[in-house]
Structures are given as C-alpha cells and as structure tokens.
Length: 160
Image 1 (cartoon, helix red, strand yellow):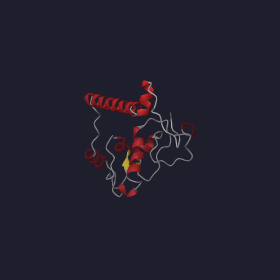
Image 2 (cartoon, one colour):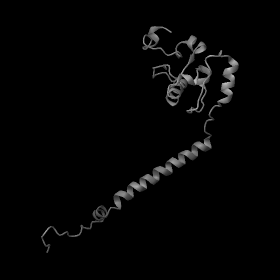
Image 3 (cartoon, rainbow, N blue to C red):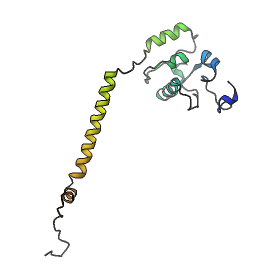
Image 4 (cartoon, rainbow, N blue to C red):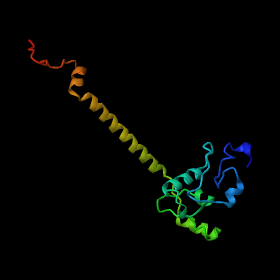
C-alpha cells in the first residue's frame, strides 16, 4: 500500500488493511486493536470487526481472528472466542473454528415476503391508531362535524 491510496496511511495502526494484501494474508486481529477507518470501502468484514470489538468489549483475552474467520457471516455473541494466540495459527485450527461457527443463512424469498407483510400490517395499525387519536378527541370531532362546543360558565358569570 502507498500513501496516495489511503488518507489514513500515516496514522493507521490496523493490522488488517483492505488495501494491503500482505496484511490480509499474514496477520491476525485482536478485539482491542484498531480497525480500518475508511468508510468508503464496502467490505463486510470491517463492519464485523467493529461488531466483534463492541460485543466482546475489546477484550484481547478472547483470542485472535484471521481474515478468513472475520469474513464469514456468523452470529456475534458475547460468548465469542477466537483462536488462542499462544498456539500456532494453522489452517486446520482455522477450519475447526469455522466449522464451529456456521454462516448465517440468508432469508428465503418466502420469509422476506412475510416480513414485508408484517411490517405493512404494523404501518396500517399505526396509521389507524394515529387517526383515532386525533379524530376521537371530542372537541376535535365536534369541530369536524360543525358542532360548537357547549357553553361554559366562566367564574361568577352567568351565560344567558
């Protein structure tokens, strides 16, 4: 990577850099380490890094993660642990970790449609509720129908 490619080149200390192929192939990341600051790169694993750091509280004792591990779309929970950094990080250990952390399956079209219908039903209920809250107020309803509010006695005055 060279300076013109990244505006954060001089102040960045992220061990995994999307613009540096050597770091992606050879480095591991701990939850207390920095992540890439660039917001213009549409790389899903950077967001997952941030989520891991947030969920585990930046605890370095949770182990380290390789790019292959972070690139998988898995559930990030507070019980998440990476690889033990005191042992050599081998492809077999990474494969075993990946086998224990299965990828989240994308939603089927049927499930997406049900979610859309559920959201639409909620919007309809909210709109109906909002309509009731304004039109069911007696004073507002009378104004809509054209009925004047009842005469009110003011202190000590008799209307007549």
